[in-house]
Image (cartoon, rainbow, N blue to C red; front, side, top):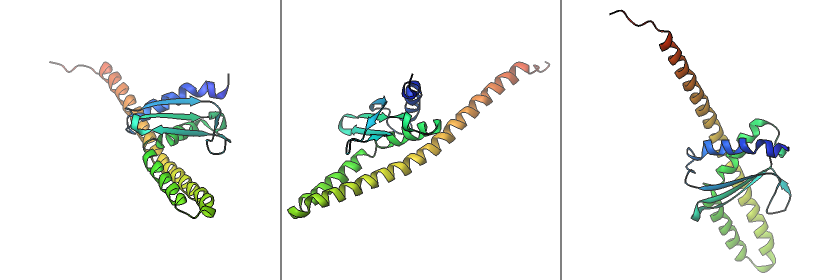
Amino acid sequence: MSVNEKLQPHVGEILARILEPMGLDHWRITIKVGPCRDEENNERCRGSTHADPEYSQATINMDVEELETGEDVEEYVIHEATHIPTWWLHQAAEDLANAWADSAPKPLMHAIRKYAQEQVRRAAEKSVTDLGHSFLRLFRRLWAAEAEIKQLKGDLKIARKQAVPPEK
């Protein structure tokens, strides 16, 4: 069994835990765990996301075999999921980059399009990475608080069982 096959349920569990707090619980998100290719250059990649905000649908592709540790899985699921609510912004920037290139003189069109699209890609990745790290820190604090509350509830249950009822 490959690493991707072993970790697919874990990836799905992480996604299920983050959907509601990220405001994505109304989206239909398909997650594919296995080798993936970058749409731009067809090179193998760690992850990619494609969203269709009009229909609240998205596909996340992840190759967990490309990741280094178990913690990276959480980081990359959150990173890829963060592309979804920012998709409109990325798409608008891409449209502007293409409009700019289309308005350039013919000999410069290709170079301007390539430059503008790379700047949009870099800005989108940097923004999503920064937001994803913020989400990751917040989720880890939330998950730690949930674990602490669960432990406290268990301790309280034990304490109630062990308590001596007051005399009447």
